[in-house]
Image (cartoon, rainbow, N blue to C red; front, side, top):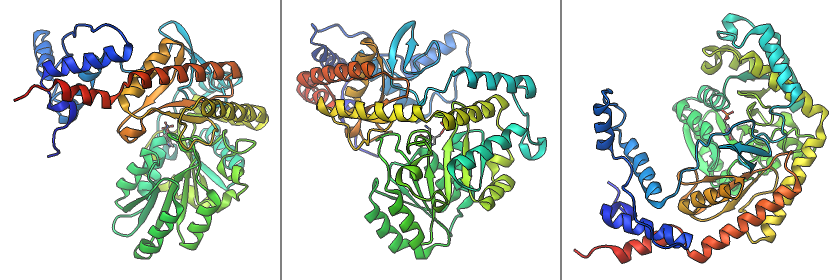
Length: 474
Ligand code: PMP
């Protein structure tokens, strides 16, 4: 069992003192009396029996107690958790949270298409014609013209032979990778920061899974040189634009490696379609590479294309194989008509409105330049649509996100385990709808808040120091 560390080793009373000292020090306020820590497992059990509810069998899972501990610590720190915030309306460059308007940097509505009148109209027309669901798998329930129209348009836009759409972006990676690779025979090499859906797909396949350090193609080459010959099929999986760091892989180098080692290359374009390349065609356009040199283009419809679902684009045989055999396609319902229509209308707008792509690129560049000028640590971001601001630990990231919301800026913290603890960050998503003044205002607020926390020395280190000082001698 792992040794108990940090806050875990303290008694509740000491924890209270510690956590409230940290909170008060960070706020620069007078010490406040701690309130009782939030519900424990047995409190919850008592509450349910008192109200005549059945005991919840999942409440006793060890994973639940971890969630409860995190919640209790946050409560003790007076840090409201920033997840599942309720937005009152469409989230674009601005959004309303609890009736208050704020500048929004927390959605993937990159080109501002979600809510565009033409797209909403297309979705409504599709509902009137086909209803809200196709009610079964396309294989058995038959096609709606809108599905094929979307697939054809996607393939043409990306520059490959064909495409297939599925009902979830995450499930698209899971079923495609899980289905194409085989246990005991094949190899998946992936960037260490690749999306969870790639990892789940690779694990599902049972193939040998090896990761290489982020964007380190020397390490990938080493891996291929040592392991490739032991396997039949080999898949290299990367993202076109990394969702946590906002940087890109060197596509020409990857194509060269995959050809030399006879591997398939999958590029997840969830965050790069509509973002990279002067006309938004993605990383191949950015690097002026031949899109057909990549074996498997994967992407989502939930971001730039303002729908929901995923796609695989590539050769005719790849698409045909998936359509007839991939469990997540064959045994799952076809895409809901309004979503397919929304994605198709978005794609048409994208083709006809490259000015939005240019505006997004300008916004990303401006955000990055201003952040650097303010001495904020933006990691390896290339300044497209995703710019992290590194703040060093989870406690600081959550606290900062809440402070910024108070000042009219909605941005989410990314904390352990999504990223290593020391890389906790605020992650800013830009859209084509942001105006330069909004970006300037946000950067000045972030810089002020980060400086204030640094002055207070707020963070887990401070928590640990106070813990040491207040630990009772045994
Ligand atoms: N791939 C990447 C890189 C993602 O960031 C995401 C989700 N943000 C997905 C796949 C899954 O897509 P979806 O949310 O549309 O299911």
